[in-house]
Length: 209
Image (tube, rainbow, N blue to C red; front, side, top):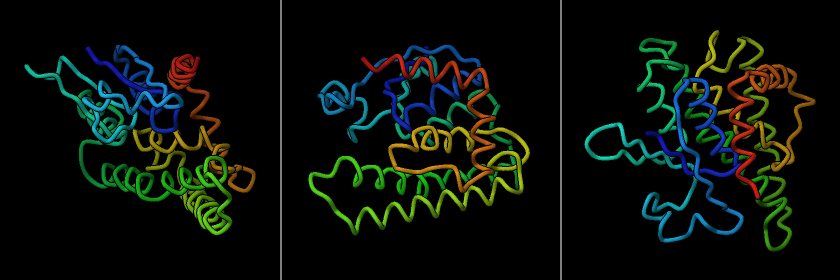
């Protein structure tokens, strides 16, 4: 059995999307980060870093596999099923290139832009400008990639698309618009129309009280 601990966050949504795309059954547990449930002793026993999502796979081996970090979970699920990740060669490298770009570039920029715009205890104009500019820059890096290919790592839908989907889905939090990124807008509309993605979004949104 696969159990997922998550909430309606940009990183959490990635895992149910992958599971729905892969046709794997799973149980979804709500961890309400707005109430600080990610800081409880019970959750910290699963992830000492105190962040969602967390995967627990009791079918992995004699010992349940507990896995954190959304990109690591995506890779695990893809390798478990042999889907959404090329087995070798340049195509596989392009997926990892986009996973790392998301983890080191677009994701942090969007997250920090949203934090300083909406959650900082007092206005921080320099930080807002810095991270809003960086979020816009990384968005246009992705737009240039999608001007050349239908999906972020090439011709096929992969876990790299799922990784990027999370923050583009929650782009309003970061104050980001797709008006000047037409290729990202085209890609996002195609991804959000996928039945598996719609099922995942519905399940994750249902976690919010």
